[in-house]
Length: 326
Image 1: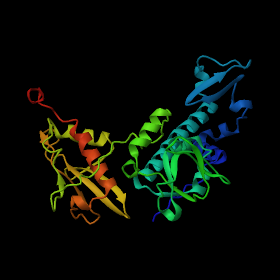
Image 2: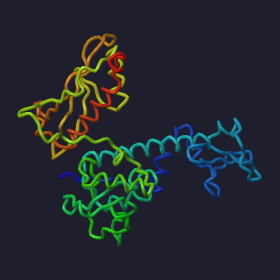
Image 3: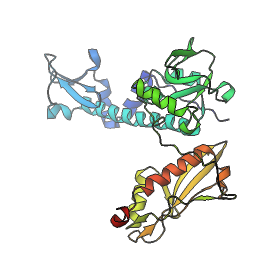
Image 4: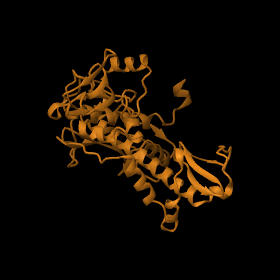
């Protein structure tokens, strides 16, 4: 089973990479002295720093200004902080996307990896309060888990379990952040999150899930519930698909999922005519890595859920006939 590894994201690494992104012509700005409290000397008695993602300045008396003077906004120190802010924003996006991919693939994550990244706020934001389970040998143990609250080299992985009790998974050398369709007693976890006002940094418990029906027609290969959705222009269907983060190719909206050691792709027909022509959606189906159609009975739970989630979201943007709706 695949393993996940993350590079160390220490404060020193962050600072080093941020400065490396400053244009060569501005390298002298890196020599500006860093004053107490993270303020950087901007010259003429002013100092600047970042308050979240906002540039702020103070004068020689140490008073924070309501606005940053133009000459200070254009200073080398301000540009250096601007480069740092841009890097931090991109870094946060990459961390969130990585944790999201761990969840979508239900990958086992080494405890050592969590220890390396936990002190970085960009990693902590998507990790904190994710529902995790111990995964000895890479196999999830759904009896031992909870909302992820921290990690300690000696104590193990700290969680709040389904009973609302704080506990440590001492022997958990690996954990998984499972896709919600795989979480036993999902409704109980959702209810507990509401009771404790727990907010997640990734869309896990609040993610829309769709279980594969128990009764299927023998040999069925497609879902027709989202067919015949009308769009006045194909470009509107394409735009909606892309805005939701899905790919468009060959007339299909596509969503690839890695599950059970293989890639399964959900495909939902949205049309392939002229972009300004009227179009109607078609069936939803799944193919394997060799483009072979998969029977619904053989589609994995995550691939099925994510495929229906894609189709339903696109279908919801269709043109609804007012007379039919009434």
